[in-house]
Image (spheres, chains in turn brown, red):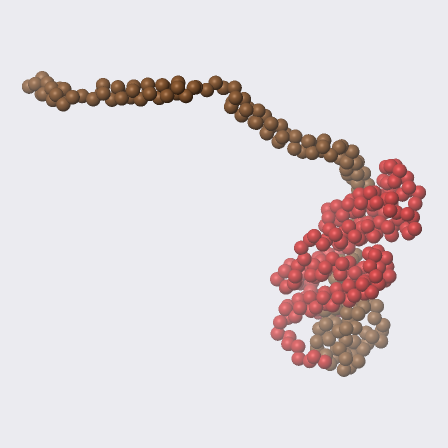
Length: 157
Length: 198
């Protein structure tokens, strides 16, 4: 054992299941092998933490049974509803709002009266002429401007 | 078997009795995989709901406890598979308490000092961190064999794996955990060079 590493022995079985002879030979070997001594130390601590970990058990709460039965009832109730009804329940609001929007848009497109093309041209023309007329009304002639200026000067004198 | 038959026929109180009678066992299995009460409870609940839907497959050949243990093991393994694994553990990942606990163990390798409840919890937390480097199946094999002194045969029965698969998983897990721990201890005491390899 002195010339053989004991690392494989450490990994082959839990430390506490090794025989006294095996433990003794490990200790003897470790006196002259730093690597195996380190491995043994790591294995001992690993074994210790795993023991502690496996003792940490959560106990069921007194309400656990009631809770499981309630969830079971809930799931059974959900399964008893037909597939289409479940789909409608989840997407019904969205489908309804989309249908309403489509109906409103259709109503606006087909029911609100629109102008005929001839009327529209006439309206456009009349608007244009009004603008042009306004432009000609606002425009002052050169003479009018001069007379207005000199009239003000004469009054000032 | 009678309870299972009644529960299968829709008798809710019979199923309630199954939950009451076997929840300690199911919680014990789920506790191997999870530490948080909420996670353990969630897993246990899923186990019983799954058991209810699979009651027809329980033919009464084995014990109800064994059947539920197997469902619990597979359910928890599936839940844990979706969790992210830590590729490597370093000293910086450890809390101050965990570091101190490791230091204490280094100077008390024979484990002669008495451990308080707090120390036990720190050790369990540390175990969780170390176990995170393993796949869930390896964690289970190691916790059952090294932690609970279960035999290879018992693990094989609980998981449905072959005995050789259990042995391989336990060996691999033990090796990986030891190496992770060795690395942690080495990093803590860097400077202590390894001079002798045999």
